[in-house]
Length: 174
Image 1 (cartoon, rainbow, N blue to C red):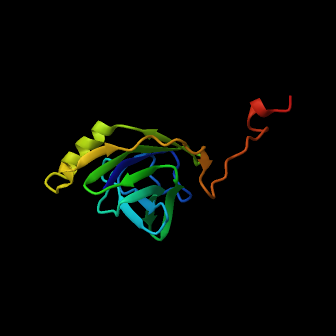
Image 2 (cartoon, helix red, strand yellow):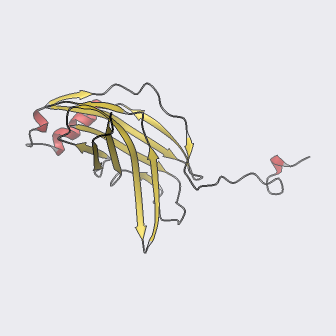
């Protein structure tokens, strides 16, 4: 089983103003691809941002994407991030903990990733949520930190405001 945690610290209200500003943890969809992309697995985070992907065939998997969506009266807003830098190995009778992926999103839609490794906190969550399922008795291993964190980015379709010299005295030609 692969498990981990995803949190989105969101200050961006969305194109239609539907996204909740603040810390998003519940109902974030995560998608994993096997190294050869032949197998795909999806899960949603719980109220604390944890996800559990059980019963994977042994092998290496990448966290491919993280998505949060709100739909209200035929309008939607979403946050979607391609993530290809978190890699973990699924093995029989083993729970591999990827750590916490924190995505910070500014008011303007600029974002960056942070990795936090809180293995003991993850293990405690596993024991609470998976008590009596057999997964709580499996070996618990923590995946190593990613060697590379991608640079910051900008959400597609979100244009940053450019400073206006008429409104901003610091940008005045004087």
